[in-house]
Image (tube, rainbow, N blue to C red; front, side, top):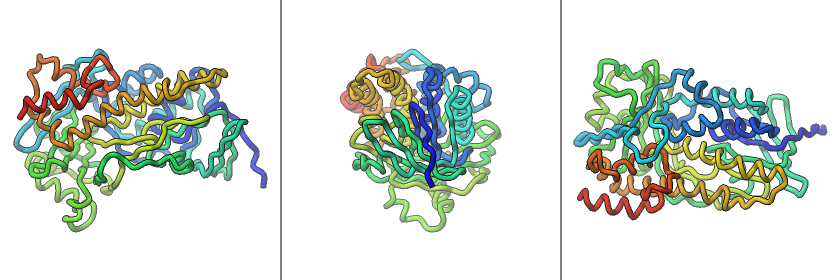
Length: 410
């Protein structure tokens, strides 16, 4: 049976934050956009703690009021504990101008909201549509797959991969490269947290470092309506020391802490504990003739600083200008106009993640410079997501400046 072809200017694979934001911004410019999402929304996914830098991209797409009306939990900073030390970071105490607050979001609700807004902006968003093949020619791009109505055959001028961990184009075009980071394992769930009687700041994510193993850390992300996301990141070798189900292992690790165990003593799981291993990813290139990769489809570092959605939004934002020019017939230097500027922030976050697991950044966070010290403000800016502010030396020379600061903490 011959499947009739449909034609669009741009096809975006994936309706997560990167895909939906890109679809909104392109559709608002009059570009015909089709979004193909493999999953059925709403669907559960982690990456729930946004950074203030993300708000600038939501604002650019005209989505601030819509997101604010969704009653997500406001976030104004982060708390860190290792049972011996405690420190609190307020995003308002940052070096870079811009938003100082953001939200902590259940992604099933947040992603559905963004996809709905993409549709309202004029994009065609289709769920349960899995892409099986993408081929390129002088005439454009041919995309085939299947959805609820059967097989589809789509033709477009440019394809954007925002498929996240699905990594459609890296898989089909063999773009995957070895990650710079060792394999780590994450266990996570949502809980009815019962924190109302506890001394707990719901406006901040809590990062807890294991009191004996500094490479093991936990997140506690409070949502509105008395629920929280709880998770742990641990090496597979250490996790292998624990018996039982994923739930047994998660709560056994929590039990080895003092503060976090106390906070969660009345918590009750709302969903089965899920697990993910070897999540860090990298590719040989973020773009090529008639395609580009956004967010996690290109590179994912680590969840520790909640950089995933911010990088996704930044990549979507950087895509718009060069893609609009290419569709208008201009020759675009994608390395210069898309890859290089995106790399500034990704490399900054990478250095901070490396410093976290090396222990250096933990020493800085638990022994911070004085509040009025510009160094603290510069570090807070990066932790707030402003990793593209090249006026900040902790962006442009991250390793050098972190080394200098940690030497003063010893």
